[in-house]
Length: 206
Image 1 (tube, rainbow, N blue to C red):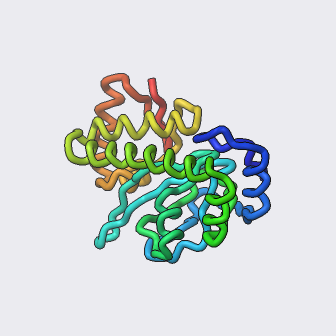
Image 2: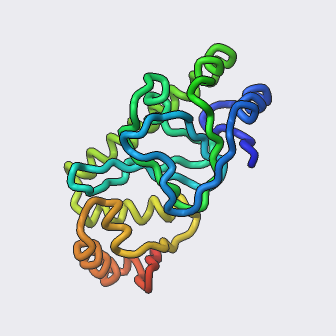
Image 3: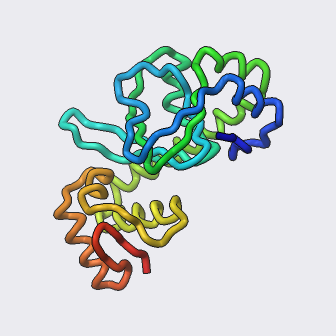
């Protein structure tokens, strides 16, 4: 497992070496929970391969997708929770088979003292995640469900590099915080409008 670069800043060989020295490599299968809500944050994940979806659950058990963590990125929510010894406010799940470098929280202060660019990396990630969360709020508050659904399919396609999204209607509904019948109805409309092509557990963007 190699972390060749961190996408948010020009990473020096020295900090990459230190991250590998401190980090604990972990592998997660698709759908495996990496971090549970209300659990104490013991390590900060940096994704080296695959992707992680970060979700929020309401008291009734309904979930909504907040953002994805891609290779070279970390979870700012985990960073804040670890620094302040607080429990996680989100759940992180492997979106596909994923490899992660887990950086123990007790090493964070050392990294910030030794490498100013590490703090710059964290601030840039914070800015990026804040913008993504604003997009979620905007979508929930102002967009129709069909717009949200199409945006979701396009984002999944972009993330995988494939115009075909391999998910069930139930899985999509779960991540959008809606009902399966709503997703099925809207996808059927999109197929009639020649926006997508539907097949078993597969949605292809046209």
